[in-house]
Image: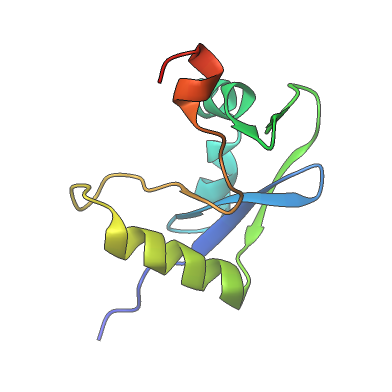
Length: 103
């Protein structure tokens, strides 16, 4: 039996923001340096506040049992091809249409 890949959580300024699978801690830490991710978390908002101000420390750690459960639930609900990186946000995201002024 093959174990599922470990789940990691990205903390921003000590707050858990998103969970994802990676082969190991080193691979998970590389995600923090990806330009596309940094842009996404700078653009996304939760309760009217940007997820990342571009300055706060990004830190990756192993996920808690609760975060793993949230990730697994998101993975079940995702209509995404197997093998694609799934980012399960652990915070409620503001509606992107509201931000852009579209309904």
